[in-house]
Amino acid sequence: MSETISTPDSSSAPPLVVAMSSRAIFDLSEAHAVWVKSGDEDAYRCHQVERENQTLAPGVAFNLAKKLLALNDDPDAPRVEIVLLSKNSADTGLRVFNSIRDHGLNIQRAVFTRGLNPFRYASAFGACLFLSADPVDVREAIESGLAAATILTTSLQDKQPKHPELRIAFDGDSVLFSDESEQIYQRDGLAAFNRNERDTADTPMAPGPFAPFLRALHAIQAAVPAGAPLVRIALVTARGAPSHERVVKTLRSWDVRIDESLFLGGREKGVFLAAFGADIFFDDQTRHCESAARHVSTGHVPFGIKNN
Image (cartoon, rainbow, N blue to C red):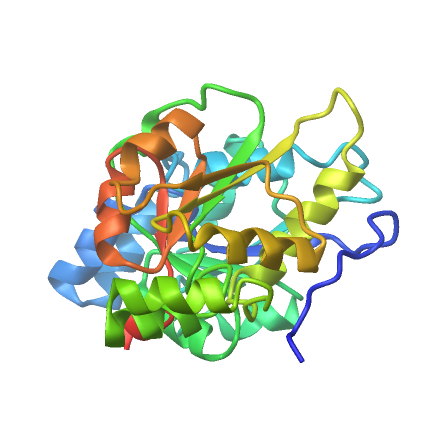
């Protein structure tokens, strides 16, 4: 029996919890360079403490965080919560909290682990997504069953969003869906892949690591009143006809709505993501991430056969 995803009652759903690292939200490249160059905790601590009243510039995921928090119109019943997970100590992390205050971000909960991977606290907070600049931390999170992505460093963090909506784009195979079809493509080629998708068009694919996050976004879409900031979701996949049908029927079986679906048939994704205006895009393949990162903020998902 195929696994399905049901959409919860939006009126009773708990908040969507997203865990982000400090290097995802803020530009900590200068401080990180001090750590990489010296490897000395005291030197890093001195650097941060001396600058703890200097507000950090936005990082790659800053606008995403801001737009997620903008979905909360009732402080007593938030739809979204962002939790900060940081490898800083509380001492060196004071600069991060000061920057959260200075930028007006309503982030109240945080964990500082002084060098250890903090992702293990994501599940304790009930997070369904972990975003970090550290690929090792992200891979551990993915292997534990948590949706996670490595935020790619670009020069885009200084750009202001051109639209008020929160726009999130996903790849299909190995992100929203399992990598079962991708395994056939990698092993037997495109003809075998298309043949399998035609033969199994009525059989929903198993959920991938980001399916629960998609489900939570869909619930928020149903809960946001008219006139409030909107959530807009896109599927941007290298699939084309005839493999599109199984995608449509899989999402239909999950009772999940996708606002825009782009079946690109192998075309480069970057320019299409720019046209959609994605605040962030998630993909499992490095080459697609590199193309996307030239246009929009991008998260690499280390899941599936292409990442083994």
